[in-house]
Amino acid sequence: MQKTQVIIIGAGPTGLSLAVQLLRYNIDFVILEKKLKTTHLSKAVVIQARTLEIFHETALAEKAIAQGRLTTAFNMYYKGRRKLKLDIAGLGRGMSNFPFALSLEQSKTEKLLVDHLAENKKHVNWGCEFIRFEQNKDRVMVSYKDADGREQMIEGDYIVGCDGSHSPVRQQSGQSFEGDTVPKLFYVTDVRLTSSVVNKDELFIFLIKKGFILFTCIIKNIRF
Image (cartoon, rainbow, N blue to C red; front, side):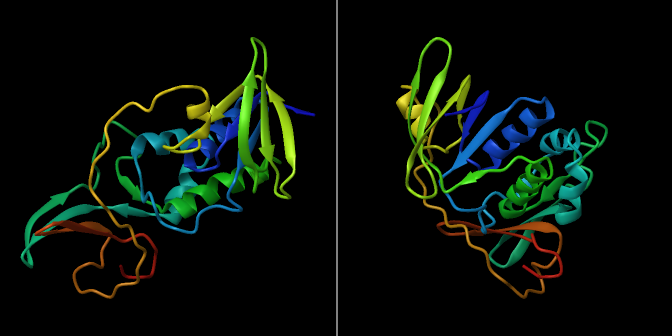
């Protein structure tokens, strides 16, 4: 039976970030993810200063900045006219070494973290689906299906559920999900868009009757 110190369930940005920190402190871990690879979608597209400060501790901040775009302004439009432009270049200057918001899509963020783990001989167990865990006063036993569909067991000191808002780990541990939800429907889509307006390292929000549309440039050399 495989043994480790920390068993991480979920290899999204949260689970991968935890793995990077455990690696930094020489804490052994195993990370299980039911998906077969990192996401190919943009999803979360902004990295804040505090995150970059943490990335800097493991020499990842510079790599993230090289792959992303610095967001310099926020624009608000209504009925085809710009009503507001807010300069956010240097936002937080004097408070952080990274006084800006970095546009870096989640697909690149996940790959950055996965590559860092691989460079240090640690790998995500892709295609491994968490089933259940059992715990006593000293250890925790985790059952999961491997990439071939076979049930496996792993023993650790801790289990950490980084498996999203519908976390099976949280549900099996009997913990509630605190906070509020917003009863609104949002769509996030990746598009190629040629525009005389939306073509800068800035955020553009267009207010419409039933909500808003937000545009951000996230890929270099392509206008969004």
